[in-house]
Image (cartoon, rainbow, N blue to C red; front, side, top):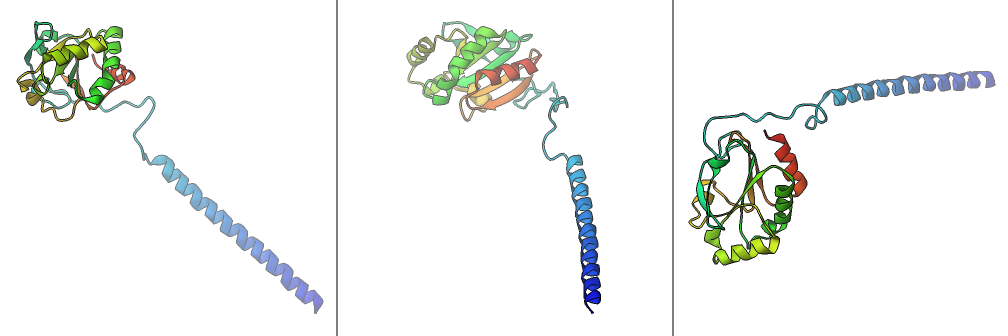
Length: 200
């Protein structure tokens, strides 16, 4: 009788061990399949040396990336006149700003550093129609030691043409006059350089 009980226990344990082994083996197979599916599915944008999305170029004048930036002519703070098309063949950072705008104030030192260190044209269009006068603009320029051209949009015609809502708003324009990047809000120096180096 004791032998029979012992045999039943041993057979039961052996059966349980076989069952447990088979179950864990099946779980591992399922887990492995899940990992394979996960590895073959792209859940985030490609990284590393995979190519970025190419800008679709157009000969249309417009405000979308890939389109030719609308031309304009404005007076400068120092009394000159500037047209955007005068800088065809050069890379341009077109920035819309105002003295009363805290993010504009925050990005100005980085813009000056960018202007000093890179072969870039910066056209800083002041929304002069929102200012109390050009004295405020001059005071701001002196305070920050800005040496790039400050354009005065007294009638707000260019900011309307470019449909400026938040400021600062920046357009990175390549040497062929096409918009390569539109940015809303303050940018830092590293981001400016990064976008500049993508352009021709």
